Image (tube, rainbow, N blue to C red; front, top):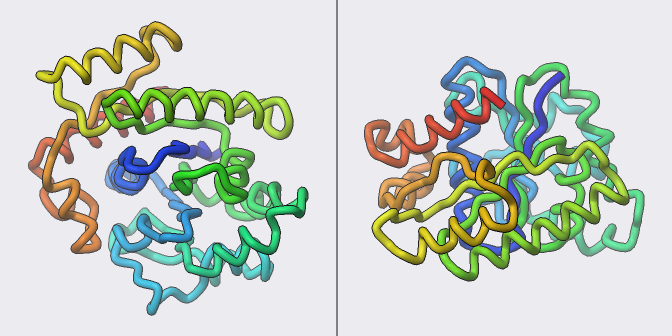
Length: 252
């Protein structure tokens, strides 16, 4: 059985897409078959792997609404073991047209049953808001990791996510489990970063944090070139951090 993971946060600017892309790449480099599903209409995860809207042969909308064959929507990336179902602007239409259709929330979970056996990991990059697509990914997932920026407003995003996860577990997916929090833009010399860690630990416990992702300019630059951090600058501290996170996830 594949592990189905959502990297999710209701708040933007958390490093969620950067984390989803680079953990997916790290796991693929470790020999795992990985499917990354870009559920954000902005399509930043797709762009971060060099998948432009002009050259996609199929998208998540076709998978959800048109009942397209998985072979027509799962696209290769330049990393041999990493595949992607890309996003497109048509996902805005999905939100608009299906937000009041209760059954639409489980479309994604149902379709994943067709492809799950082919992958060790299925990973969602979710939109930074409370939307139908966010709900769909969390209903389909089994594990959630919350990337959170190491400042005061980041804590609010964590607690908003906890309320959302509680709701989804009660209504749709009793197996959904919070597996960890990933601090991003971390600076251990700043008192604020330490204060955020202390506050979240007080609420969620001491063992909730994975290895933090330190401030690193290469992580911001890599998406401009359509590359993961490992292809863009494999020796930088961002690459080291995401390799450590992938190792921790594998051991869970």
